[in-house]
Amino acid sequence: EVQLVESGGGLVQPGGSLRLSCAASGFTFSSHWMSWVRQAPGKGLEWVANINQDGSEKYYVDSVKGRFTISRDNAKNSLYLQMKSLRVEDTAEYYCTIDVSGSYWGQGTPVTVSS
Amino acid sequence: DIQMTQSPSSLSASVGDTVTITCRASQGIGSNLAWFQQKPGRAPKSLIYAASSLQSGVPSKFSGSGSGTDFTLTISSLQPEDFATYYCQQYNGYPLTFGGGTKVEIK
Image (cartoon, rainbow over all chains, first blue to last red; front, side, top):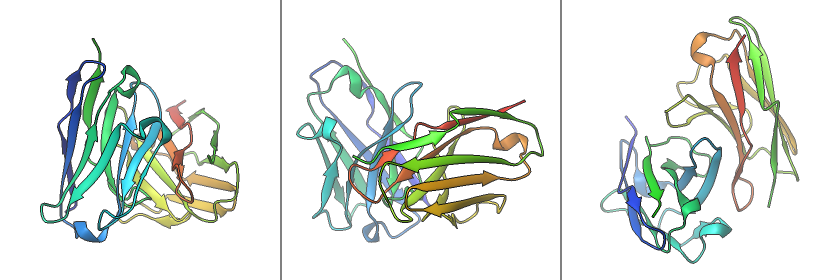
């Protein structure tokens, strides 16, 4: 059974940092693109970043470029999102997903940026 | 950026109805389109990829069609568990973009 379990979310002040993790199981993690998608409270879905199978290609939405870094550790079947210089508008539920087409989603981890 | 426009933004339907949701891309995206279902407080779930391919385990009451700029998601014989918000997403070019969502409510 495919499982994606996000962790690392929480409350942080503007300008702060957080590192999200996504533990993957039930599929060959190293064979798939992986993505982060977020959803602000009461809003729609927004793609944040994705990474190819060996980590050599990374793409970001403009609003997080230079502040967020996506990475992966295929030996640990884990995906990460390092978030710096967080802003109030980064407040959202963050999901990790498999493939550019979002074939499977984790349950999400909440990030709240507030003073 | 490729803009994805869904219509309607909401609709009311009865159990047993068939509903169609439309998604239009601001430029051609081939068949690089996915559809998702999201229920309140839950993570989205993949329904369709490549515009018309059913994700594993998804019932055949869900069907997708289209290519280029115009796409549809059809849900036949609506059941109580189908009342949710549906999103389309293009993955033809970066940034990947979602439609604004269509909320399907019980009439």
